[in-house]
Image (cartoon, rainbow, N blue to C red; front, side, top):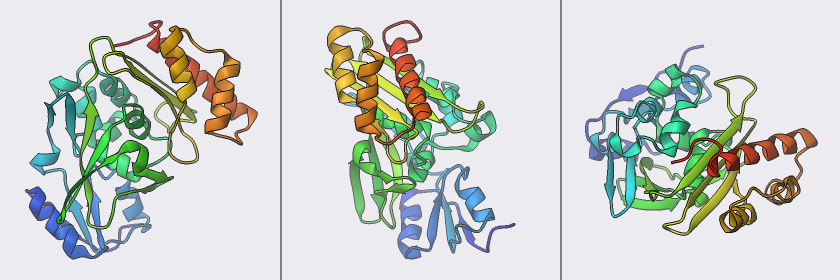
Length: 279
């Protein structure tokens, strides 16, 4: 099947792009790498009158830092982060995560903001940005607002992006020299979305400790008791304690799901404590 007829627009400035969104009155879709929107167009699950391609907008194509916060343009691709194109992201958790997203062909085109806007519960960036306590920069012709990642994803494939808005950037706190992190996921085969996943970030400089599980029915869920225990003791909690925390965060999972989730948390924390790669 082919997409229904639509007008394709590739603005060269953010102002022009936002103007087209404002004029669309709900009949406009924003396109990043088109790894999610493209199939939806071809299956006619999405039938916009106008598609606005944001990949040429300079405001969404760079990575900068100010006051300890790294700003990642929404149109930056997974492959660019994987390849270390931006010095600020080299050797980081983000570079490791990017290298494990789907397949290289997807990473070449897919964008960070596009993945977040699609809001698949099993997506890597949804989990990682939640663990990092990132904030999303949402812009429209009416102005800009910042939304914490914890409040951005309202449910599976549902976000806080309003009509006429797009994700222009992601703001991530810079990690300290002694920060440690881990990321683990289980997929049926390489390249597929995760069946269970976990991301953990510990930054002594900021007193920040977070363990988050993904690939749930909705948004990722934090395990504050597990994060606090690891930060205090420097040891991995027991399977029983992890199981209790997972039951509270994601009730109703069957035995196989719980086993996968527990294993993902354990492997993630092993990385944090130095058995595998850390910062």
